[in-house]
Image 1: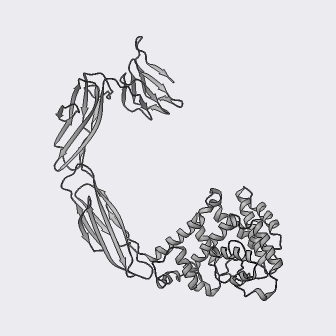
Image 2: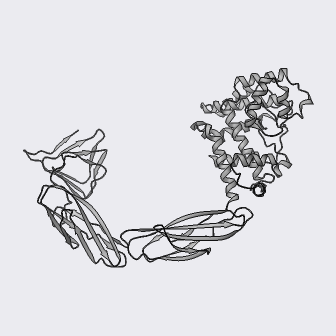
Image 3: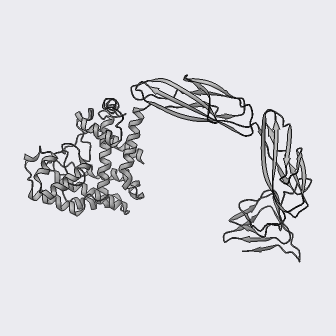
Length: 516
């Protein structure tokens, strides 16, 4: 949304057309400018020193010199003939403030009464006030009004602004815009909201010097398109800060170099040769990159440095028991003296992988399920693998003090308990481990079931209850066998979809119970 807003400002705030209206000092929280571009040709060339100071302060750019800021802010915005970045940024910031105050109530009745009082009792429509600055106007106002306007100047110090005979028309136009935006936010379409806004404005928009009804209708409509997402989402109170953040990022993108790492490949098995290239890094505006510095770290330890634009490095860890991650840092410095850095991770995959399955039968067709003591569990590590090599050993730790070796083993647990089974496989300098659990005896904790039930699964009395959450599905080719005495409970939205097989082996003495 903000990107669209910036594009719109580029069109409307940096265009060629000069409005027939003067810049007017409106006595609200801001000094509003004409809806169309009112930037003079001179102002489009460069921003003033005071505007530069304003940008520097508003965007927190004090660390940069005025000279360096001007180097980038005086650049032309792409696709614009007379709009510099400085002009674009200063007007974007100000319009964000203006529309914020418009929508949040700058034109409430108190301001209108104050403005009318100013017109009636303090100033005339003569040309004598055309050259008065804000400071001069402050001196002309009553003490209380002067205090109000002086306090508001902290928000609206646009430098010198001028009052013209059309100031009341401008005031009414922006008042109409405020009502228009509120009407659109309430769901009113453009045509009806525009008719309502014209009633609020109450003046002939086609009168000489005003600009024409079509111009303002298009302006109102464009402002709604730009701001509607913020208004409807309730983020209007944050827009001033968001615009400033966006403008700061824009300026920094021109003031600072940008470090870019291209690494190919970024992961793989050892030995892994990676080509690093910083060629897409960019200097700041009008500068050139003068240095590149690379650093590669292994677990916090520096293992390699380079000052080249590009190079290749081979990652060959001597030993691995899991994937290994290396951190690569690039720092670029340009001729302005500014630097930027970025980082990339390179993942060296462990070429060996451990995995095992557990079964209730020697043929390995029935998946393991908890059972009573003296139950034999069958383990199969056939799905472990090694890339470009052969697994040399399979070592099992059954969690009860007993161990074994081999691809396929079995073990009998004689006591109730919860056991962690660990398989460790080795090949060359590489090793990997995998763990799973075995439950022997009876648990006091319910077993919660989610998602799909794959393969051949057996539910036994080890758990006091199996709780079905949401939709649990037995797909085609899978079988769920429920042993005698098992209780299956369905939560409020629990359901069991059966496309495969469900076998409930209840007996007269031990029924399979389905409940909710």
